[in-house]
Amino acid sequence: MFHLLLAVIYLAFICLGLPDSLLGSAWPSMYQELSVPVSFAGGISMIIAAGTIISSLQSDRLTRKFGTGKVTALSVLITAGALFGFSISHSYIALCLWAIPYGLGAGSVDASLNNYVALHYASRHMSWLHCMWGVGASLGPYVMGYALTSGSGWNAGYRYIAFLQIVLTAILFISLPLWKKRQAPEESPAHSKCGQPLTLGQIVRIPGAKESLVTLFCYCALENTAGLWASSYLVLRHELLADTAAGFASMFFVGITIGRALSGFLTLRLNDTQLIRLGQGMILAGVVFLLLPVGTGSALAGLVLIGLGCAPIYPSILHSTPEHFGAERSQAMIGVQMASAYVGTCLMPPVFGLIANHISAALLPVYLLLILVLMILMHEIMMKKA
Image (cartoon, rainbow, N blue to C red; front, side, top):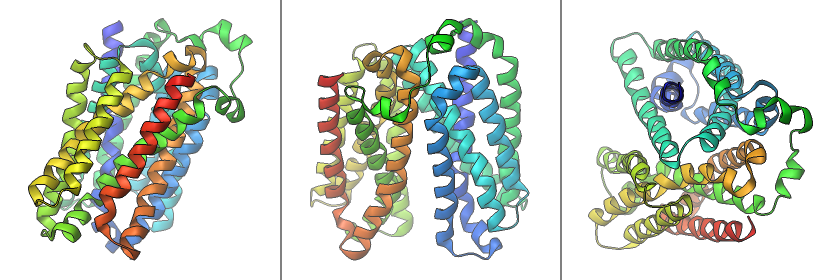
């Protein structure tokens, strides 16, 4: 039963990654059909992110009341409904409305599943599960590409993913008895009677909590800024052709996916803190390679190193949360951590966009270095306090 539930969770992570890259891959076709400017993709993305932040902050309350299994199943059902809504939409306003349940469903399931894995499984599974998310995120564009090349249109691409999510929802509801056998401390009947969900004020007053939130903010800011602007940096700084730069920039994501697969094996020798520090060191080396004025080979090596360095940090921070802040507070803490991470995702890449527009895109390595220094500093302070 233990291994069967783990297989269900692995499948859930693959399916959760599938829709995350759909908007980017479909938008070149979508915005022309919808007759809106290309920049309007940011509006949909921001609505999804806002819903994700809100539901992440509510994950502790929801998980205490319903349990991880039900929260996961209901959240995926909401997400599947939102994706089906995307598939029948033919206006930008309709997409914005469907983006609300999309974000609300995504945040709850993400926080609940990450906390469940952190409580019940070894660190290697957290790394491999996030690797599976990367597999799903990589497959999403292929599904959308099939829909577009077959003449079915982007609506069909969303419909295919919605049907896969509906199948996953059915599997999750069938598997509910398995979750009850592996009940987390904060889900036990005794705890739910005497314990109350923590408020945001109570959470940030926990020793080390603020530093942990800033650490996650910085990590996601760094990862998403590098992923979004790497191609533009190569074009503007190294004068590469756009298609060549896109191929180079994809190595960043390849580095993350491969790195998370390898991190699972490294957990047999290294603990979470050591993996985080190792990842930070590799990111630093990657930034140095980006700064070296020795050509595109150095830049490619830098992107791969940054991707490899990013790989163990996010899973290891989440997996170590129950150890640092207590199992009874881990769901609340992870919910707020993920909300902070999403804020970093939304805020910091556009900030660099302003820098690139008004100063120079060549400042990308410097920008990443400043974020990295703050992340290292906050993590070390958190370790001392927690």
